[in-house]
Image 1 (tube, rainbow, N blue to C red):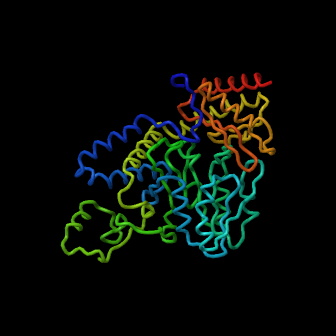
Image 2: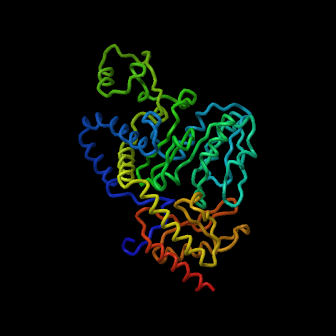
Image 3: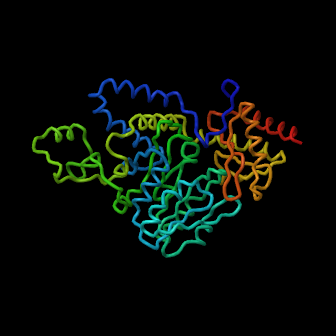
Length: 397
């Protein structure tokens, strides 16, 4: 609680740590020394990829830096080798970016998008199994749903995808930074997350993991000069590349090699260096605290929220069991089947007037008022929130 204000909308945007904010100051200092900046740029990107790899438990070469989850999904939608008549499975709880990115492939290449209908705000391997067939090539799923915080059984769905030889893409934007993630143990093919939510990087940079075995199958939409390697298999070296640029015999049609690492999916050219620096600092901060401790604090606040809400006359739309839970707890004031959320809007507005920030998010007949505490929130803030809701409910009656 800061200056009497309680922020419980981290599923929208989280509050960056002070060390992350310092990334902007550091970068401005580098801008004053262009020669130093030119030689630091590759290191800034490399440091961010290395931090992301440690955070997810994968190899550095399996990480690409992305502006956002949406950009990562869009890049993949353009890059995956799909043919006319093949289909992509996406459930009805997903954020619209998950479907929007596929429309060029639908219109141009005849790829089919299949809506997987879910039940009670949950999505399981059995749900996907009902829609899968020999033409299914992609399963796309948010590991944690932004509407109600349902956390899917990624390992089980990964087994289904492998059995049917599908690419399994996981949107981790509502998971990474709040809960522990081990991409190798979970078994997905691709995992992506922007930085502005739970990770706490406001400078437009997140990460995308691509399993190394897939890198030969998935081609980027284009190559950039940053992807050029003067010798096959030799990592990019700033000094060697500068020496090449200085050579009078250099020619734009020189025979070169291209990187066979995940970073070929980055935008290329002049990158988002302040974003990469912010991502490095944000991930380092989370790892210094320990993601086990971060998760424990968040889940403790979640339990307190659930206990308090269940004592009121509200409908909790998030899972009660911890195995399917996350940092998001949603509730409504009635069954949303009638599509009327006027009371929910009124309560959100009242909470805001009392200095408490939450949000209202609904889709496919579920959701409601979304409460999303992070590691820096405290039990007293949850208690104040619950008392404020209780007071509004009594006043309304």
